[in-house]
Image (cartoon, rainbow, N blue to C red; front, top):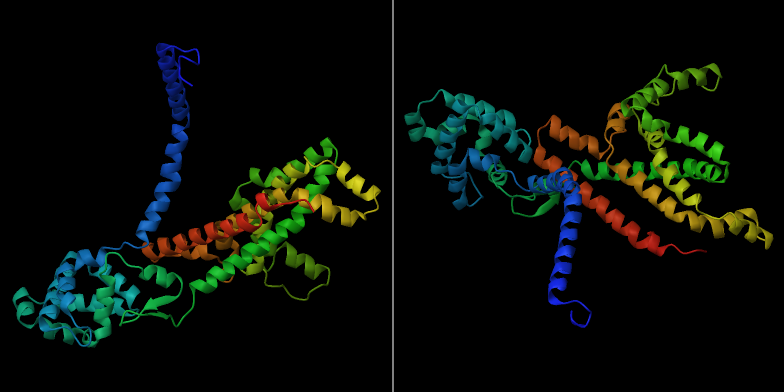
Length: 413
């Protein structure tokens, strides 16, 4: 329909279109702060993490000439003297610049045990003049340590010198690249077991919050307003207390001479303290307590909207209370149950503070290892790869959950 037919002359139509554009611009300006916050707080860190997981130019910047000389290396024997001399020259330069430690750390990640080799070689070549290195650098390098005569060492150097590499992702799933370019399983399995333990603990915590939270939310939804509000205060009370304080309280409860062990011994249940702190048990118990409100609140919000007459009608028609709950009430409460389970599970998978304080070695999760590589080993690339895989895993689990258990698939029984 034309503007004229619609009763608008061209000038009015232009004014109306201009007014629509102005309103859209105003609406966009209102949400601009939120968009900026999302970009800087979420999009940019995640993009940086994904980039760091495949990008590591440290070795390429330290020994570019040596890596260029290694391009023509066959890989079957020790590189020729020209490569050795160039590397000896680079080692002397790094020893003077005090950057040999960076090279040692990077090569040691590709081939464990090379850190001391690189540092000792740099110290020995630092005292040699440039003319001697240019003439006898190959001999001096091989004499500094016999590991320089092993082709595996040079394969490690060449692998560490790649600016873009998938090696950190391989390491994060306990795989490694062999000398011939293939992929093999590492002798020591660390990260796959840790991912499995993290998922198992997160699932256990989710189930425990359901077992504890569903009856509480059901009772609150059918209680009087005064009693429901009173109980809601206790549900929200953990949010008013520092997370560090709540976690520290569990340390006081579960330690060897803590409240739990003292009570068990006083009641004669056990003759000696039970080792509960710094275990998976302590991590699961503490995190269940901390994350329980995230299960109760969605359940309570949904249950408050369920008409109790449905249950009464089912019972009046001959159904048992348990059968009526299973066929009528449970399906209607599944949106809140699924939302709470998803919240608790995703938060549990990436939790850090509580496992670090009460979990010890046995109760730590993948987030603690990521923090270790960022804060202590300074292996940011591996930490980024582990974090990226964790993000991908959570997105995959969320997709599967939404695909098979999401609210679009929920039907009344």
